[in-house]
Image (tube, rainbow, N blue to C red; front, side, top):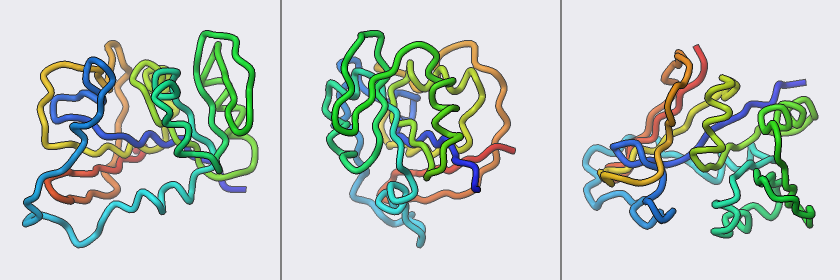
Length: 175
């Protein structure tokens, strides 16, 4: 049985933010110049075909991102006691432990969708297998950061890169 990977996949501004201060993401766009585009492209649909579990924070859930994953098992991290429904499962407590349990079940890979506070737990536990980060050609100046403070040193290997309309997608795996 193939070990399921925990994969972080998101976009961030050049200065390290994954959302504006109010949680906005309308800035996540490329530019019109495609002169530096690579032949290979990032295929998000193909990525999703290899995923059957998505983990997101409550803020992402409140922005209705869970509706994009109706055919996946969606975990929502929250401190509130909420009832599961349809494909939505609310979890609190030790998120890493809960997802490690899920990882032991047979299935496809696990998608860490966001936000920064949720992802921080997995970075600090050093259990992310792949980091797929799209660098958006924008400097926000302020917002919600991807990396919080006091992270461990994690050595990675660049496995793939794609450039599309000024957006650089970097795929790193563990060394």
